[in-house]
Image (cartoon, rainbow, N blue to C red; front, side, top):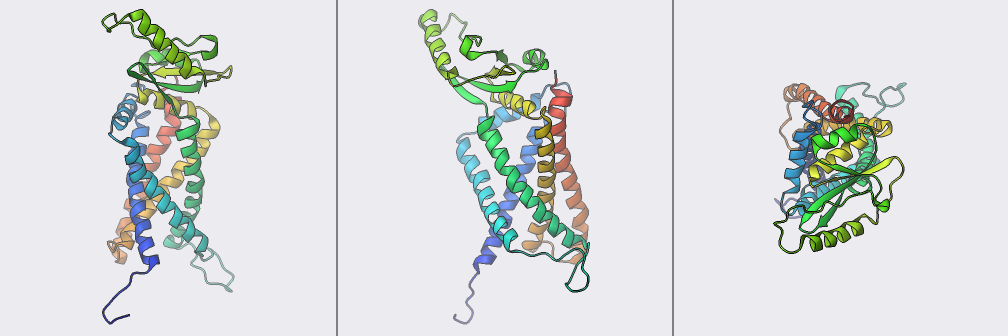
Amino acid sequence: MRAGSQTLSSDFVWRRLHSLMGLALVVYLIEHLVVNSQATLWLGDHGKGFVQLVNLIHSVPYLQVVEIVFIAVPLVLHGYWGVKRALSARSLPLRSDGSRPSLGFYSRHLAFRLQRISSWILLVGVVLHVLQMRFWHRPTEVEIGAKKWYLTKISSDVGLSTLSDEVGFYLCLDPKEGRCPAPLPASSRISGSIEELRDRQQSEWTLALEGYTLQPYEVLAVSPSPGVAFLLMVRDTFKQPLYTVAYTLFVLAAAYHASNGLWTFLLTWGYLLSFAGQRRMGPIVWIGCSLLGFLGLVSIWGSYWLNLRS
């Protein structure tokens, strides 16, 4: 190597890329929890804020490209390097008999261990969360004529019938038995024969419903609003105790991992080198963690049980 030249190691580059991708995910986590909390925070509005924000997000041009570039890519890169480091890193024990060094319950040592534990929880949680919300339970978009409708398969409960008028959806009881009316146009101002248009759209609707099989306890919610469809999906998820408990653990791990990760980001990029600065940042990190945890928990425990039960 020539005098004066410098070569950046791959470890140095990956550490900073990992840190930057983590910052992007912290920003996304804040946005995600703020949107979800709107299903609960304003009691009595039946998730109006959530519906408006989700509709706004779905109106963004090239939304899938935005999601891939700003969410999926940072998630994959951050997760890849995080798993690699977690498998190779070794932490000192909290207690020792003297045969091995130990940092005990020193705050940063404990934070390091909790960061590793939360990372494994998040690895499993993120995979299951994406599978559930993006594939298993995601509302289906159906285009009838020139209008889009959103179908959400949910479990039936007594609150849905009264909630449908407030939120703006109607229920299909059994698509295969003809108990699912098509959202057909009622205006005679539409060009062409209204009867022909109705017949054509009825055929499109019937074809769209062929893939749905409902259990006796399930119904199909139909709405012209993606926000309403996703609100019903969230409501249906969090009225089930297993999902509620699992997502509580997931959100708490995410809140801690993001807050402590922000502290590490500032340290990595040279903004938090002095001991006094690190001490001052400590309370800010815990306040951020508490706020994120609050937004997540209120979304989980309040969307059905407080604001949308009936």
